[in-house]
View 1: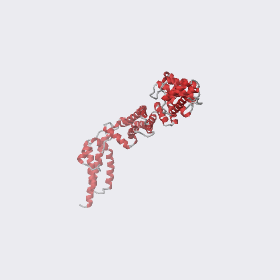
View 2: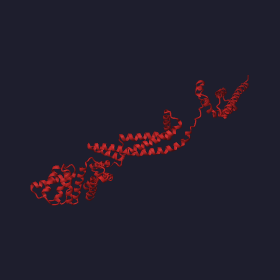
View 3: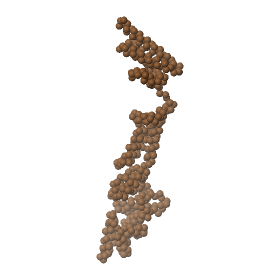
View 4: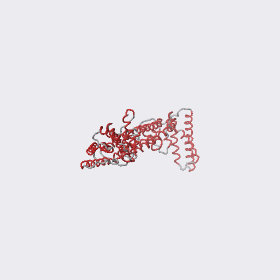
Length: 441
C-alpha cells in the first residue's frame, strides 16, 4: 500500500469519527430540546467518541486542516452541552476509571450552578452592606482616637486592635479577594447554603456595627475604671500615673465631671494653674459642687481676683443650702460638712482680702464651728479681728490656735504660720501689736 493510500485510510477513519461525533451531538442536542434529559449511554458515547478522535488526531501531526476546523466547530457544540453531561454522568467516578489527562477537558465538565430564588436579591444585600461597613470604620476611628490620645496603654491597645480586626474581617468579604476567601471558607465549614452567603455577610456587618455601638456605649464605664485607677495612684502619691489615668478617663468620657475635677487637682499640684482652672470650669459646668470652691481658691491664690472668687463661693453655698432643688454632683470623697467648711473658710478669706473683715469674721467663725481643728480659719480670723482693731486678746487667742494647728503644707498656710510665730513673739516680748495694713495672702 502506498503512502497516499495510508493517508486516505487515516483521513477516512477521522472523517467517519467526526461524522459519528456530529450525529451523537445532534441526538444529545435534540434530547435537551425536548425538555428531557439525555440518557447516560448517549452522553458516554459522545465522550468516548471524543477520546477516539483525540487519538486519531494524535497519530498525525499536523492533522488535516478541514478535519481540524470541523473538530473545533463540534467541540464548541460539546462545550455548550457540558452542563447537561455533568448533570447526567457521574464524571468523577468515570474519571477514576478512564484516568483521562487534564488536556481531555470534556471529562471535566461541571454541572451548572442552580440559581436559588434568594440569589436574585444578592445585589441588594451588597448595596446595604457597604454603608454599614462605612459606619463600622467610622466608629472604629472614633473609638480608637480616644484610646490612642496621649499614647495607648495595654487596655487601650487591646481594645483598638480587637475592634479593628473584627471590623476588617467583617469588611473583608465585599472589599477584598482574600477577605472573601476567608469568609467563604468559614461559611462552607459551617455548612451554610451558598444562597445565604450574601445575607450572612450583611448580618455579620450589622452585628459588628451593633457590637461597636455597644462598645461605644460602654466607654463611660471604662472611663470610670480609669478614674478609679487614677484615684488609687493619687492616693499613693504617683502623680504622673494619676495624671495619665485621669486624662484617659476624660478622653473616653468627656462628661466624666469627677475626672475633670481630679485632673484639675493634679494640675494644681503641678503648679499648672491655667490648666487646673480650665478643668475646674468644665466640672463646674457639669454640676460638680467642689469645683466652685477649688476654682475660687485659685482666683484668690493665683489671680488675686477676690470678687470673682467670692461670687463663685456664694453660688456654691447657695446650691449647697438648696441642694434638694439642684442636681449637684459630688466629685470628691468629702462629706457635706467638710465641703461646707472649705466654702466658709475660703469665703472668709475672700472677704478678708476685699477689706470686709466683719463679713469675713462671720464666715470664719462658721467654719470653726464646723471644724475647730482646721488651722486656716483660725489664722484668717486672727487677721480679721486685727483688721477691725478690736479685742486684741481674742486675736491673740486665734493666732495661738493658728500656730498650734498649722502645718505649713502649702504656701499660704506657711505664711500664716510665720505670721502667728511673729505675733506670739511680739506678745511675749511685750512689744506693741500693730495691725497690718493689708491682710496676709
